[in-house]
Image 1 (cartoon, one colour):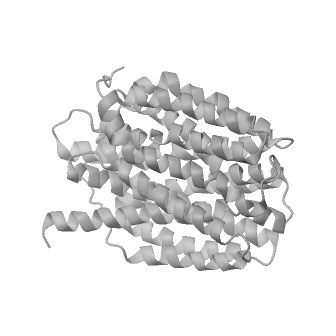
Image 2: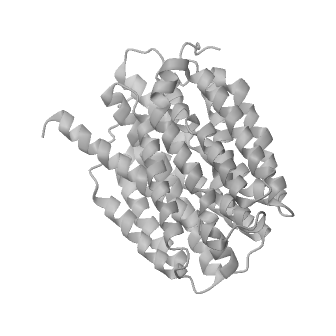
Length: 387
């Protein structure tokens, strides 16, 4: 098979991996109000569930960091999809609340492995293509999420047990032709990584996932409990968020090329904060839905630009391809941890602070997201590594 044709198949497989992850995750989170009602969970109990999921997702990312140098990223990615199929089935068919808690928490481990490995695959492919393609991969995640949200809306009156059929999707992803993730041969001890500027980009990723996870995990519950949306429509917190996010990501390459990453991120930050304000002060559920739409448009490009910037900073200006790949591998293996710090803030803190009122809970990311304004300079391609 010609090299370019093989790369195209690898790219399609990785895009499918992103889409699978988004589909399963959004399918579960948009059903959280129903699971909460089924097991009579309070906001605090739901927060504890999300805390366990986030912490174990971090464990999964650490496991991927350990496994990938030995087996390549494709092997743990397949194992994690198999684990996802098992835990999603167990959670949806759980006979009791403890079984549901354990199954959902274990799903977090596999979620973390998938998160790390698909981004390792995406960065490796971007290097082979020699041009930015990460936004399209994250766009695939958004497409998967949109399908999951649309499925929730279409089956709002169906029994929760039908969700066991979701296992078919990660099982199908097992056989995809992922990229063999070869190691560079440069010992890890010899890798010099410019962590300071990368940490600034990582801080931006934390703030993004704080908003992103708050929307996914608490948005449907907000519509259900704070603004009395019809139960069959609570997934509308997620669907317009993903729709706006996907549209902006598709246009993201051109926006960044025309206006630069710094200006795009700063403008998006203000839009995101406005969207959160609309949610917080919404007098009725249609207004809150509009807020989630605006929010999604604001933060859409933060994640793909963060991974691209981290890979660029990690690679530096070295002409040694082996050293560059070793640096990027070292960074991507750890960079995904910022995801879960943000998820912890978005999922757990929003729920804990909003235990009395989720309006107060969403006011937290409304303010904290403004921290992206000063961090945007870290995305400037001309920024010196020594800064």
